[in-house]
Image (cartoon, rainbow over all chains, first blue to last red; front, side, top):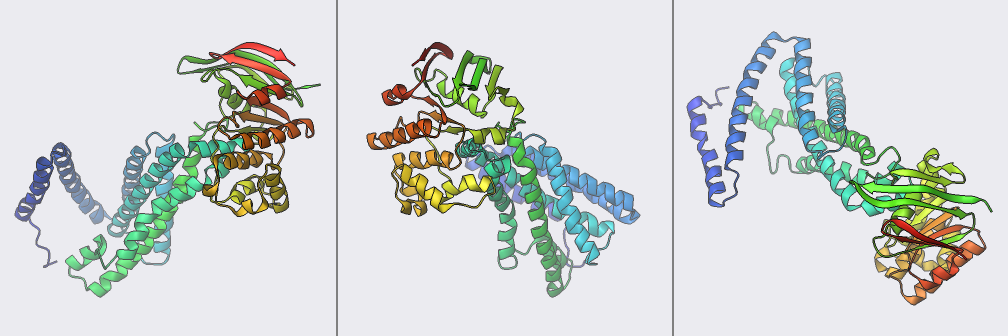
Length: 252
Length: 218
């Protein structure tokens, strides 16, 4: 840990980077000053609270508390994804199911393989990593579903008029939306190591771990996120497309 | 002859705005009915209601003496098939479109039948593999029409399908419609301004401002 040199004073100096961002926004008249200040204050408060909570939870090392923390992560990620759904009915429940499925399957496999241990210091950060990537994938799926159901309205109506069922009428949109949800993870997997040194790997290297050892964790994370985003994308798309129709199988 | 379609006081309101008011008429099996009226009068809406693509606010629509609410919408739409005024073709080729009715019924594509349908609207067999982007407006409309006819419906709802077509395409489609009505005994309801289609009709309905103005039996 000798390599880590972040103290309160250095954080205050690092705040000048926010001032750079504010300067750009001000000069270009982007009107984002309030958003930046709000998001910075919120990030600081959230991280301080989380830091103390995690310290407490890691020290106690209790299964129930770990599960509660996982549930809180699921809930928050589902709520954030739900807000991106732009009014798709039942989107909070759908997001929760998708995040729960993607996290459970991915974590379950890693636990069974012995890659992870069910201890809070491993489970909680990994749950957060999976849930946040799933949340982004779900948000992209919702956006794609909404735009395609709007843009391809006539085509869907024609398919319904020919006697297609809801899945047959929506299938190209479902496929396209799943692809959209998965594509950022696939793209970042292609450039991992050559463009970016992602969070977990950087964190381990910062903490003084041998980079050759750190990449093993990053490979695990890459596999894990591919699984998580594909499960969450397919779950959310197949649960959401029916919400665009009413009980008489008409397009809303 | 028995009624196949029976509208009983059908009304439609959208956001408190009255679109259709108490529309009532009956169509006998095998008849040809045309609906005329000014643009925006609600003619296409009547067809969409009959097709089950939208729902009425009040009244009832019966198909073969049973309210359409009692049918499975998917099965119903295969019997009562709606053709759009400006159709959108799917996929990349004409085949993608003519295969779709087989795909949704989980049946094997019958290429010979698809080619026969193409030829019935004056399109040669090699059109099956043609890109939809290479088709003219009239050719697209003809492909869209036979897409509805691969498996013959009992009722065909035609929403101004010849309004934007050249005279040759119109003639071909009129011949096909006549054949479907005369030989296959398919009941046809057509929204139209075309004199030829109006002349083909057994029954003529005029709709203005969402209200039925007159019914004429030939």
